Length: 342
Image (cartoon, rainbow, N blue to C red; front, side, top):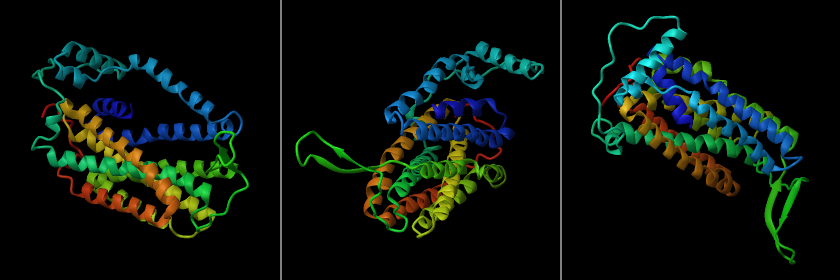
C-alpha cells in the first residue's frame, strides 16, 4: 500500500518538487505511529491488546473505500494506450491549478509487454536492481530492528546488563496441571516506557529538513550512504552503558536516521525505473522489505536476549553494507525526469 501511494505521488509531482514533497509525507506516517502508541497506552492496560488490533484495523477498512476517489496516473494511462483517460486527468489538474492545457495531443507507443520481471534483470538495470534489493532489505531490517529493540531495551533494561525481574512480571500458565507454567516473562509497559516510545518516534521527522537538503543538494546516492553510515554508528552507540536520557537520545537519533533512509530509497527507486517498470520495481523491493522485517525480530528480540553486543554489531554491519551499496549505485536520479519507457 505504501509503495503504491508513493508511485502515484511520484508520477504526479514535477521533477523539482519530488525531493521536497515526498519526504514531507513522512509527517503523516509519524502521526499514525504516535496515534497507535497513544492508543496502546490506553487500550492495552484496560481491555487488552486484541482490542488494540481491532481498533487499529478501522482506518485501513475506510481507506479501501476511499481508493476509488484517487485518480489513476496519467503516465500509466498513456503507457497502456488509454490517452483519453490520461487527458481527463490532466484537464482536471489544469482546472484545479487554473491553467490551460498546452496545444497538441498525447502520443506514446503502446507496449504489449509491461512490467516483466525479466526487465528488472536486463543488462541496463541488473546492477541497479540487485543493489537496490540489498538496500531495501537492509533498511527494513534496521528500521523494524530499531522499533523492536526499543521495546526490548525498555522491557529488560539490557543497556547496562541488568537482568533484574520487574514487579510487573506476568507468568503465562499453560493448562491446569502442575509444572505447566511457561518461563515466558511478559512485562507490562509503564507510562514512562510509552513516553520514551513517543519521544523516540518523534525522531522520525527530526532529520527531515537535513534529509531534504541532502537529497536535493548532495544527491540521492550520497545522502543515503551518509545516513546509512550514521545508522551503523548509532547502533553501536546503543551498547554504551548510559542513563535513561542517554538511551532515549540514542533511540531518537536512530529513529530519525532509519526514517531518512526510507525516505531516500523510496524516492530513488521510484525515479530510477521507467513507468513501465516502476510499479514492478517498487513491488519487488517491497517484498525484500518484508523479508527484512520478518528477520528483524529474531535479532532484536531473540539474539539480543543472549548477546546485546552481538545483535547490535549485526545491525551495524548490515547498515555498513547498505551504505557501500548506496554509494556505488550506478545511476544518480537527482534532477532526472521520470522515464516513460525503457
